[in-house]
Image 1: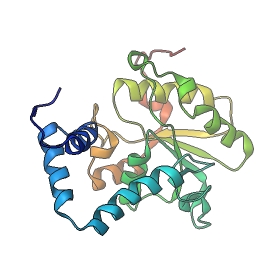
Image 2: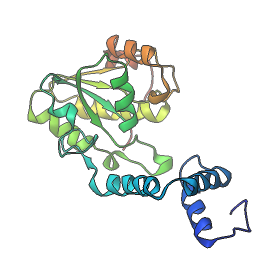
Image 3: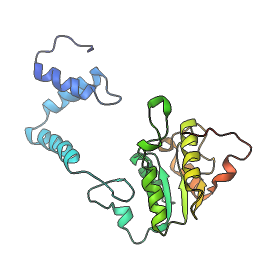
Length: 216
């Protein structure tokens, strides 16, 4: 499992193992990070560790949009200057941050928590699609922007949501194809993503003439 077998300390080995369990962190990088922390002052290491513990214990998911928040309602949903008639549907919290960085969008969000991916065992019931539909039933939303990754799974999820929302009196639009097909939203540059939001188009026009799968 490990590229190193002769750790001088079981505590060191355990710490390296924990860091190496993080995405994108191999054993060599994990060892370098642990050794860096060992060089720091006790107070600094405790601050680092306590920040992670507080994050896990105290973080909320906004009761409305499912974004990460320090309170039950996130700052975006609580901001009276945001356009509550407009909701941008994204896959995850990173995508909220990407869209916010464009400074081109002043509506609200809905975080799905993933996209439909049968190969990964993720279906519609595993996402927050029910709560999105309930938000629309409840009131003032006039337009839903589908801002998911332009992958097969993203397109499948877009189409499923479109079908779910079709009976409701709400416009459904999607990003203009400034975001290249196959791209994940978080990797799009801010100017391109911002333009894709401003130049969004009705969702129906995105699949005219194409065949779409119909997820269960």
